[in-house]
Length: 224
Image (tube, rainbow, N blue to C red):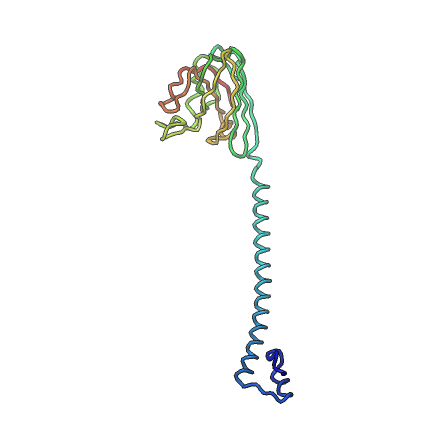
């Protein structure tokens, strides 16, 4: 009647009662106790180490993400420039604003009524900030990033850094336009001789060389 919970009592206690377990059973009972203690300690230590490592790694990941977000925008990503747009007769027809952001360069063009003919017009960034020859504007040079066969947003061998989407002018000749490019930057466009924005008489088909069939250069703005 003393054996209803046999493994709770030690072999020594059973011996005191005149009950002796076989040697193999007694040794197995001792090994089971040692195994239980070792398992408990190992589990506790492993849990503690895993918790410590997981906490450290999570803290490190959070710190890295916060550090990346805090330093994503640097002073070099900021800046703006404004310029007057000059028409083919040398008179001011609108304005150009450029603002550098962390993901690209934003360009905004505003054209006054009668500034352009109604419809689509190609526009490109040119290599030299010179609009001193109204009517032709050839002193502004070629496209930024000019290369043979490289013109066109839809060109599989393109595009050039100076390529931009077309601008639409309303029936009264006014226009409002905004786009973003990551092919160049404000710092690149304003260094040295600066650069220019050229608006063409017709639309750019974004494929034909060298300017997409956009025609004459009818407006110019110096970027400096």
